[in-house]
Image (cartoon, rainbow, N blue to C red; front, top):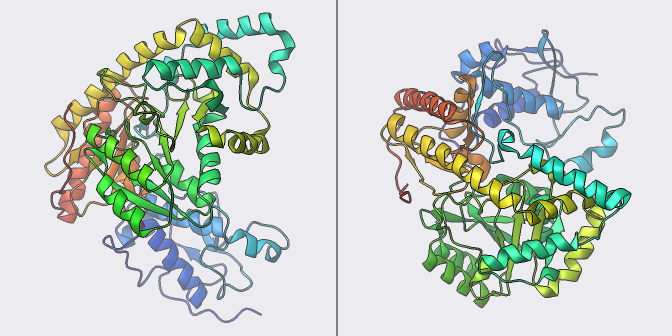
Amino acid sequence: MEQPIKRSNHPLDGIHLKREAEGPLYAQLAAAIRNRIREGHLGHGQKLPSTRDAAEKLRVNRVTIVDAYRILRDEGWVRSGVGSGTFIARRADVSNEPDRSIDIGLASTSFWSSRLYELPRPEPGRTSPEPGAAAIRLTSPTADPAAFPVAEFREVLDEIFRREGPSCLDYGPPDGYAPLREEIASQLARKGAPVDASRVLLVNGSQQGLELVFRLLVTGGRDLLVESPTYNLALRTARALRLPVRGVPVDDEGLRVDALEKLIERSAAGMLYTMPVFQNPTGVCLSPARRARLLEVTRSHGLPVVEDHFDAELDYRGDAPGPLLMEGSPPNVVLLGTFSKVLFPGLRVGWVVVPEPLIGAFSEMKVCADLSGGLLTQMALYEFCRRGLLETHLERIRGRNRARLEATLGALESHMPRGVRWTKPTGGMCVWLRLPRGVDSSDLAAEALRRGVAVSPGSAFHPERGGGRDGVRICFVRENEDRIRAGIHILSDTIKEEVARTGARDSEGAAAPVL
């Protein structure tokens, strides 16, 4: 029998969201409503305010309310229907449930509850613009489909089918198509990093390579060291694998090697994950002095280094450094690469260069993960490279992206208010903004999205709780120059309004490399 409910006059009375507190506002609101249900102040069937009314009462934007309600709905605390509103759901006993409990809609959820509690969850906060808003997407570091060389690749596929017949649709070698592995080794040799093709193993996108390397090298409760900020899917992969993560700060010269050395000395470090060339999300490159010191420090401490070379081919000035493997073939470096950022992400072909002692172990893990990669796509990529089509395509998209980067930097210079600072990369896909202190990037991104511009708030890229609240990532490769300029203009107006509303001060310590 349900206990009598002590109802408040308004479901959100007494809830105060703190912008200066750790955690985004939507998470604070979800936690507050969750606690009210547990304490009996909100009961089964009670209707929550509409997103518009709740936003007005709490003085936040509607996207914050939408995200909070979505979390509660995913966890089973509320239910909602199109046009009917959001209501407190019936729950047998909410008082003793963990914060991250979830109602999966099965007849016997208690069977799964203990298992579901620790499983990875989808990240909240992925919202769409309001109806009618034509979003300018400055969020995705992926190749622009408008630039895909579809006709050339179709010709290559036709040739593979004519030449190979049905065999190209069979299982491929577990380590990948040998001619493509040799081609990748040749490309690395031309960059000054000679490796034997036997060390080049093909994977289903570098994301799979990243997960396999994490599984292989971060064991026994050891820490995964990452740049802060870093690639957000690396963080999500680490969380899914339940790995302890520690961040190493990044500045205008890349990863802070002095901070890395201190962290290694006081932690049980298992591996360092780094992007020394056009780092995601900042776009900076590791300075030559730090490259040398990084290798010296990690070798002396016996620390494996996994280098993600995901967009290093997108060098718009022609002077980007090569992979760390060119620095005397260090034995502790694993190199990840992909065709996704320069060609077709949907092909899902990446590669890993592993030290010789790890080949057998990595290959076995790969077989257990997926048996083999797609032989047809690997054959076609080799033929595409052999004909020189990849290099021709690269030259074309480098010019295209260079113009978009220049439009991005020019628009930032023209429109951004005092106190906003940004990196000035010479390649890659990303620019990193530092906001004036007091402007929260999650709130800013939500409001910009409402106005039709999508950017990525910095919290998604930081391993530390509450980190990145002053950061915003802009990706410039999927929109044309006019839309980039329009989007940055809207973003700058949004920032100005947030500065006026919050009384924010200038950001500090955000020196940027010079183009």
